[in-house]
Amino acid sequence: MTADHWQRLRDHAETLKPIGLRGLFSAENNRFERFSVSLDDLTLDLSKTLITEETLGLLFALADNCQLMARRAAMFQGAPINTTEDRAALHVALRNLSGAPMYLGGADVMPEVLTTLARMSAFSAAIRSGSLTGHRGARFTDVVNIGIGGSDLGPAMVTAALAPYADGPRLHFVSNVDGAHIADTLKPLDPATTLFIVASKTFTTTETMTNAATARRWIAGALGEEAVGSHFAAVSTALDKVAEFGIDKTRVFGFWDWVGGRYSVWSAIGLPVMIAIGAERFEAFLGGAHAMDLHFQQAPMARNLPVLLGLAGVWHRNVLGYGARAILPYDQRLARLPAYLQQLDMESNGKRVSRDGTAVTEATGPLVWGEPGTNGQHAFFQLLHQGTDVIPCEFIIAAEGHEPDLAHHHRQLVASCLAQSEALLRGRDLAEARRQLTAEGHPADVVEKLAPHKVFPGNRPSITLVHDKTTPYALGRLIALYEHRVFVEGTIWNINSFDQWGVELGKELACALLPLLAGQTPETGPGEPVHDSSTLGLARRLCRAMREESTTPET
Ligand SMILES: O=P(O)(O)OC[C@H]1O[C@](O)(CO)[C@@H](O)[C@@H]1O
Image (cartoon, rainbow, N blue to C red; front, side, top):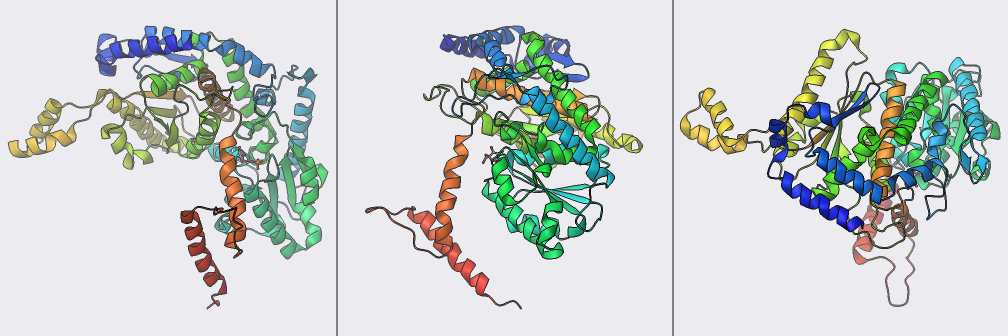
């Protein structure tokens, strides 16, 4: 019974709480050796979490009880584990560069995967070399990816992270339907040297279709309708819809319904990344993810990074009751990683019913948020250290930066990262605070007044991930680690991590509101308003101002 496993974990947690994290460190001086695990140069340090070997044993037993190994095998075997959409979740095939067969319903998907990859390589090489040009024969200097969610966050995050490896055209990403996004992006660009990639799995997403139509008008307006074909490419699973938009099929890169949007950066959705860094480095990125796939499949639980990271997440969420996790990359170029992981984690595991549709009995995905360190330290770390909620922090740091001339910056970055996790653990008690204030020469009354404010409770958990350098390979491996972590947690919670029904209702209601904002009277059902009075009131209020704005003559 899974309930017994939860109970054992909760009973065990009660025995650890009075000891606390600091207590564990005082009692054992080799926690780092015991609770950190590596895959090549990637080290996962769990020692600053409230765990012991017994904790891990209980978590492994829970994982066994939840059939983690069988579920993992089902994913790699292409079983339709996304049951509500009757689809496999076989994104791992996209980084299987060995080409060893991977089956979906008895058919090997690898030939198609490798063919698409080869087409992407040829296309990106032609753009990078300038052999494929715009309508007027000019080389493309700028590429604008139009997409949202998984069709934006992955390539945008990876392109920024791997900027030191970029030697192709400049990349831009437009996602928001707010006209400001595309307007600001296009302002400095020259239509003659700009290529658009319209990226949408479904090719129906309103934001993307609206932005794509605006981009199309921009090209047609500047270069003529006949130029459109030379300035657009598309990435989609809906090839018929792409054809309707008017993009030539030689410039369309497909992927498959067994690739979820938030798992798609490895597919043709990664085309902008390939254009920026070249096919060889893109393949290194895939190679890093593949190494993590093999590790996830082969390593025993006690050495398995995704299993350990996932179970630490479950321990924090369900047993210790922490509702959030902070993602803190000490790497400015990983600034979009928290946003990327928000979609990966929260769209996957923000669920309230089990796989069979019954209500879950345990809490599921936590709130995921974050910012790069050290900026976060000067903003929200106050709450992490002294707020009333405990938020487990996940620090990510490379041993080496990409700026050899600025090694002293990197030393400060590393020192800050380590100091934060140390401070969270260690804290500062009242006596220490008093001693410090006295040593600073404050009079006794000031010491008494200030000391409580200078207390840090400590005992706050954190996880640290370290690798040598954020190379394409290391980044691929890191993202795949987080993907599998989400899978491990979703398996323990017995939810479907691969659907996203929760995004639908808002989309439907937005469609229903559009006529109202265009000044039409909403239809009402028998005796019932279609919209609640707040939504209706706000819509009318906005509508009035919108019309006034649109009729205001330009000055
Ligand atoms: O690639 P598409 O089909 O435009 O979808 C974009 C995003 O929208 C979502 O469906 C959520 O609305 C995501 O799952 C997806 O990544």
